[in-house]
Length: 499
Image 1 (cartoon, rainbow, N blue to C red):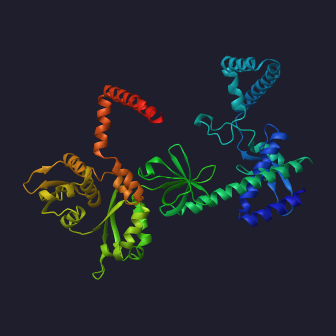
Image 2 (image 1 turned 45 degrees about the horizontal axis):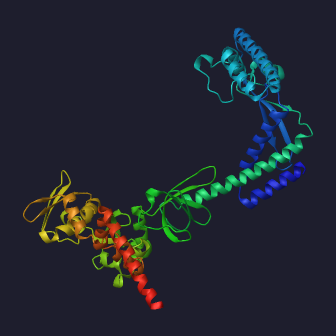
């Protein structure tokens, strides 16, 4: 493949894949310079390559910047450092050749000893050729780097037109075999650029979807992680973004919320969620046209993923009921959302600018007698009838906890008698009252009737029997003996019948 063919191939691939031509040429030139420096370059050459895409011609230069003349004493130091550096390099090469004849263990040991024994000898080599782009201390700022710099006196000998900070490009000979190397380099660079461009395009595509809902397919589990196939790439559903009550079976389709998209060497890393509060917001926007159009606005969301959510909605149009718009005819709209959330309970609350009214609405389905607020501390005390306390608090304090998050107010519950109700205490009572429904009831709303029947088997009587068996293991033996005796007694009867 000649150089002209390389140029044509580069043009064609760049046009087909939409890769920027300038980026490909810059990468090819950098790769060619590195290849030339490795095989044909000299120590003090600052090699740069130029690739002409129209002709396919390759030119290589030694590029140096013109600097002011340095004092003679500094030049002497530089020459001395270079000489010591060359001496050190020669000694190192000789020792390496000798070590090759020895065992690998001896080679490692010798290398360690050399580093410990001659740290002073390593420094001149560093000073002789500082790394490209290395930032020198202030006292060494005027150090001369013969690899990238040339003094003004020497530059004037080449051409009198040169001034300080000018760049001198000295053409270098390009050997014939370098053309073949260039073809291979160009091929590798193009492949690399194609991969990079595809990764960047995919990253840009999914970065735009950040904060949106996407439909994915459960691929597999890797430990606690769940891998979700999004079509072009795979997203990660980490444990903290999963819902405990959901079963992520391979092949299942579900909607996920794109939390973050970050770039990596292997492509975009996409984190998705099923537990994020925003997934509820996005589902409402998908299913309810009034929210999508902005007629009805979601003011705030409080969520305990997999269990319950509260959504505050508002509209400035008197002829529209914001709650009714979200529920839909015969609950059709809200049922679609609940189904997508795998049976999670959703309370739709009417938002109000009046904090008292908003807090009372947020504590529904409980009926509130009175609300007192402290605007300075942003706290509220809600007086609730005795028969409404369990509803106001909710299981383990869930209802009042979600109401506080929804409104942004700290809410205390008191009875009509004025007694403050501790949420933890009331939560335990409520939990005991609601135990027959228990957590399986959440799943029962969306699972089959067969699962409901299975749950009914887990009754208190069966639990008591199990505890008695564990408490009195000795009682089991006599029962077994009785059964054995009965069987022995029955055997003769069977024999008589046979006779």
